[in-house]
Amino acid sequence: MEPVLVAKSLSKKYGTVVALESADLELYPGEVLGVIGDNGAGKSTLIKVLCGAVIPDSGEILLDGKRVSFTSPIEARTLGIETVYQNLALSPALSITDNMFLGREIRQKGFLGKFLRFLDQKAMAEEARKRLSDLGLLTIQNINQLVETLSGGQRQGVAVARATSFGTKVVIMDEPTAALGVKESRRVLELIGEVRARGIPIILISHNMPHVFEVADRIHIHRLGTRLCVINPKKYEMSDAVAFMTGAKAPPTSN
Image (tube, rainbow, N blue to C red; front, side, top):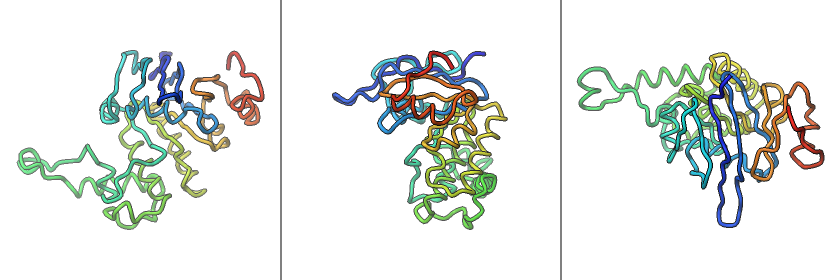
């Protein structure tokens, strides 16, 4: 089986600080790849490179076997890579609906939409409401309220709903349950399973080991800016993964 997304020898430096050093990653169709590592290991930099938010100093990225080069997240989104960032990347002064469809607004049909560029606010609001209901965020009463009025968990839910709605090739989730309660976290894990069932692979970055071991098909362990190893969560315990990522135990040569 050929991988959907491949990163080869990605490197990124900020002055004398090495964020990535010859980092590799492979993501296969219909799988959930967990990415774990200690703070400062370079996980977020790796993800930002894959989604176009950071331009690497060297290395290459292949999508469906073709080399791609992103200079912005918009270019990655155009090719079907959607990301839930750790800082959510939402616009607080805009409504939930506006954030969901930012950059891909639905325009009205006919003359008003084609020539006057009028937006179909009703269609976008209905679709946004459906996506949030699918995620279980029924506490949001007004779909057109400003994002700055939402709780941290509700904002996280909007970001997750947006990514899973529009990701066609790859969905990347950086700490998607960090600000969520138990019920919402469970729904996000279920949603990950539903996205995988549609054949869309997911990269899940999380410090929540039980969540990673529950949903991941493979686990990529990142350490000191590079990939240390990839393990099968069915063959290793969480304690083993922690020992690998902290250097307490030598990594396996194969998964």
